[in-house]
View (cartoon, rainbow, N blue to C red):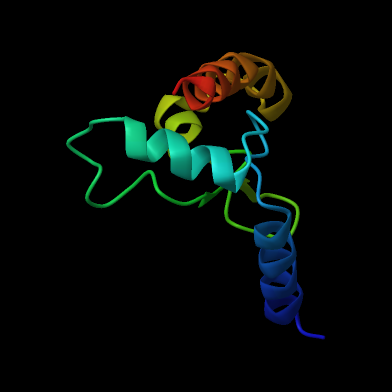
Length: 102
């Protein structure tokens, strides 16, 4: 398999697993939260997971992950991937809480 084919395979595999690397929100929760929110970006972002670089380097097999719009919007390269993951657990809690509301 070429590097590109491996990358696409991993993309498809992760989409099947359906969760944000940082906040652990599932695709179902992200879609539910999306429906409950208002945002000027809602027409273009927020409904699906996005691809993101873990570090401020080129996209590569070891340097990408899937991320929710809300985590991606908050992300900067000030924090390491591990540090940011602990920050995003709070975002995931807010998404989960809002999805429990009726």
